Image (cartoon, rainbow, N blue to C red):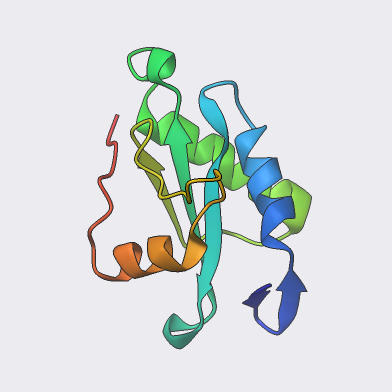
Length: 115
C-alpha cells in the first residue's frame, strides 16, 4: 500500500497508469512508493525504453507521467525519476524491488536519465 494524506493507493494501479501513459515508458519497469517521514510524498521511478532516449526529452516524459497520475489517481507525484533501461532493481523472477529502490532513492544512488 501507498499512503498519501491518509488515503490508501495500490502501487500496482499507479505503476500501470504510469507505464501505459506513453510508448517511451518500459512496461513492468516502474516503482512507486511514498516517503511518509517527508510529508506523504509520492515518488515515481520509471525506466525509459532504449529506442526513445534520443526521440523525446526527459521533461516531456515527466510531464506526461505527472498528468497520468493526477488524472487517474488524483494525486500529484512529488518526484519522478527516469532511469536508463535495465537500471530498475528486480528479483531474479522479474518482480520490482520497491524497498530496495526506495533505499536507493533516499541514499541518492539511483542512476537518473536526464534526457
